[in-house]
Length: 100
Image 1 (cartoon, rainbow, N blue to C red):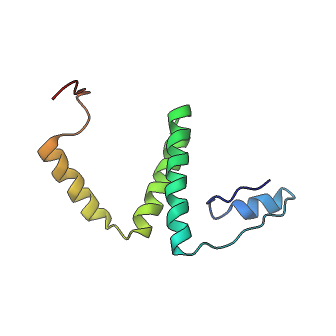
Image 2 (cartoon, one colour):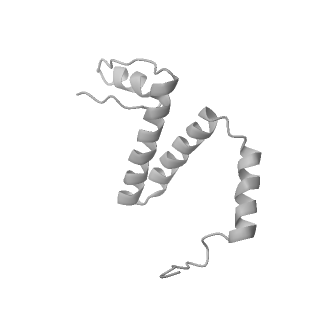
């Protein structure tokens, strides 16, 4: 079966233990960035479909990988997040904007 998708680091080992023969390669930066964005979309779709904690954890794993790749400082991200929350609020009040 052909995949051509980004997988977790231990997946090839898992496939070998199950008797498979994974064919893999290491992505260069451009391919890795492209595949991270594809994986983000994939995980969003899976979460939308199943809405469970496992899919949510997968989504966070990809977001963490993106943050690492983009070298986003977690403290700085949190500052920006809190600044936006202070200025514009969060999403806790369930407000739907119908018109403006």
